Length: 467
Image (tube, rainbow, N blue to C red):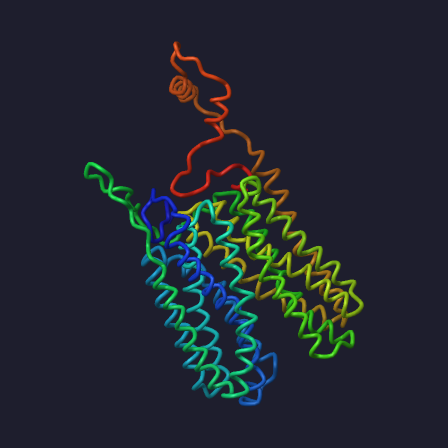
């Protein structure tokens, strides 16, 4: 399978960093919002489902779990589809699947049917939208890519704050069946976002040239596993996901266990989401600064460490005020992680391998997503102490930050130089040897080495940006 993997655009086309890219960014914002917020927003219908089918909370919770598993676990399938058909067709089909799943669920007569419709079909539809939208964002933005990623990632908390109250309103007025039907219609907006994903077109060259050409397509590029930077990122991200989603799941129950009223306890998630909305664009803006961007991997590692440290500190909270402070700092660090995770992956593998790399990373994270929250629940059932759950989550996220930081510093940044054959070395020396009559100023040489032009709309990778 190896070789260069492409998505929609020909090679050699410079990212416009604006223009129609802002429409692509808006579409990615909406898709990210639906993809990450929808599995959480459907939880407001669980009470109606429990009454309808006579089941318990653990049975209804499988709906959200299946949605997330499809979003993460179908990564390689999405990569194959994108590399075969392109981003826009895949997203159009995904939007139809997402809508069809919710509409069909409104007619279900058993919880198993809801699993298959809402969980599998809608989950697959969201997955077929989410990954291609990130690929298109990567193609349209290069210099402004960190900021674009931060703005797109902000769709998750914005839509969560909007979809949860909307879902409750629909539940109160139309029941869960009417609510699912209306949400199915709302998901058709994914098709509108897909229409915005216009492929980049190569400009014809003067003199009859056809411009940059598309390389042959490959379905899934497994050669990314030969990149030590990608392997380190994948391992660190998988360990991080084990603990990243645990605190938001248990913080409300933690507050109730401390004797906080239900309304005040639920408000903690509102605080977390509100902080997250501003943290993601801010982190993207900071990561895009000229002096910061070459060290984006270290910034991502710091954000993970910050998040784990917030978990560890949150385990010591003994009252509602302490949990509010925890949610503020967790929201900041969580937003930083959300804004930087795909930006760093793009910097590691480059444009043409990103479509395969993100699919493989999401597949690895899918396993961790299914293990993380349940393992926290098992620990809570065994100890009945929320402190240990937060300590476990914090330790896992801190460990992931150390894997990325130390792996980058010792295994990548200080990689040994490969010896060149003697003949090749002599040829290279003669090639770059200046004419005898020409004087070369040392400052010009230094400027030339530091000012290598961008290639194919990508930032030139330094050891820091390449992990």
